[in-house]
Image (tube, rainbow, N blue to C red; front, side, top):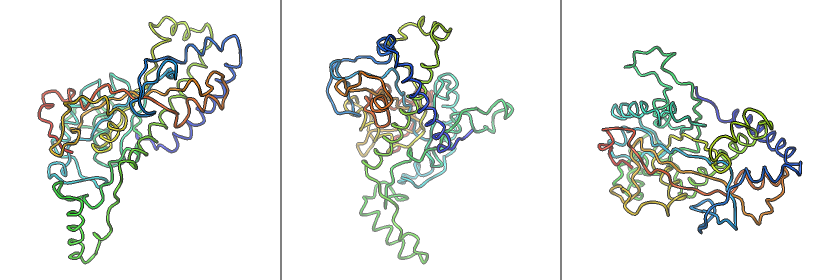
Length: 361
């Protein structure tokens, strides 16, 4: 099932507002506020960096939220343009037979396809190569070689198509060989246009900066944080004192200290994933990470990078009280968060094919 992000966002916003309202009612009771406060925040070790980038707040400066997002950033399968060494950007290209086959191999891994490791949300770019790869990996597309019935074979995952996960727009270089510089590609494009009676090549494709791409990636992360807030607090508030749910929670080991994890599947593109890695966890990269021929961080097709994102609040922001405006300020949209690298461009889920993954940009 493929869902439109707009209608789902409206529903989740209503849930978010309701959960914060209910949260404030619960927190109005003085005799329970201290206990709840202890359960919803966690102090962390000291370090120094900038908010939203490789930041671990100190115990005296800030506290972490009781939940975190675990982003599974996955690149699409091999395309015809990859094989031809062409720059794609926001243009598109079909998957090769090899790309399709390797995507099916990845789909057989239950810790990758969402059957064993359950994803809280599943996203993909709106570009065809990413959308097609996501459908195969998540079991949303019937494999012609599969002898099971379509009803048994297809997944019930809600795949959300989001343009914020698009590849960086690469301007004049789109559709040309990667060996060409931007000026060379511009000249080649203009030469082609002069020989083209339709003059269709005269319209230069959009060129996007790293900052532009990071802005939309941050917007996507912020929206996920908003949804996680709504989900976490609504589930906490609806757990009545003395209920089976509350008792089971208290019996769970480290239930008060271990943050709830929201696993998010995101099928995207090499340059956007690379941008997110450098912006979020650059200082955490190993010095010997694999590079492309151009010297960039290598993002193989169907590789997976996992980054944990956890909101935090500054203790001097006045976060001790509990009211709607204060909670929105602390844990709401565009809240500060820290990022931790869990896994970098892993291809172990591809089995014996992992050693043969080409280093396409």
